[in-house]
Length: 353
Image (tube, rainbow, N blue to C red; front, side, top):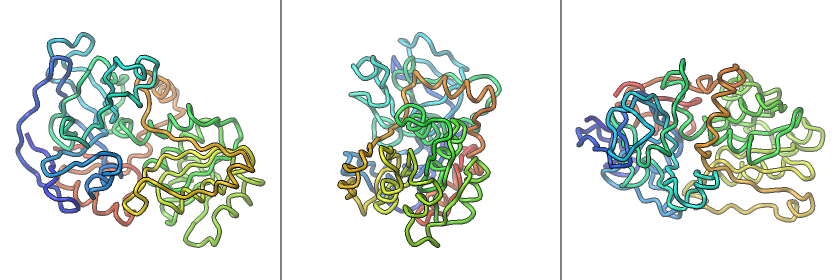
């Protein structure tokens, strides 16, 4: 089968013919119909995240936001059938550990990050293997396409989990979103659907326009603003109730914290780059004196995907609205390279393999 494979960090992926996966007894093989191209792919392609224990070297197939049809089923799989239309979470749980059993599969004690490690080759390929399929395969509702649902594997559902489950977003609350890439635009759209008033912050006017189209009521161009936190507080009558760093760089993370009012909640979604290496200094005195909470969001428990589907069915949210374009497998390297300077919009999706 054809796959886009790392040869060297930062260099174009090689389009190669590789062996087709065979299902483990507890796994299934999926024919990939669509896979989002995510900034997390960019991180691993760059060689980041060794501080997280991730070292995806030569031969690794990236791609962790797939949807498609089951084509082969392992002998021990009971609930998934050939032909099922599924999405796959990037954080693959084993279904048996205390975290999975208590509804927190996204932080599985034995979790495997799809597409980032050798034992879980990714979905920039014609086929992808899903371990523990009875637990990890998310059955998609009728009437949606794989392209529509590609962002569910990582960006859209991470934002949903963060805003709907981790933070306390109430009707009319001000929510600031710092960084309007795929995960940030997802956060704008979801916060709006939850009844919040959204302030979107980015360096580029076209991304701010997209944020407005997805529900932002105010926007701030950080390239033209001397003090972003002061600007956010001016628009939100003293500070946001929830503020999201959707990028993972030191400036946006600190700006997010400093944009909050008293007892506000900072939601960290973006993971850091080589410059930060997993650690960002924060204004801790302000956090203490304002009683600010610092929250993280990593994926989403598979048991809660139905919440998204119920909102999709009534038109309250639309993951496809964040999809910006569809591309061929050969285009993945160009899209990854464009992410270096934040030149991609929304969620680009591979739909031709």
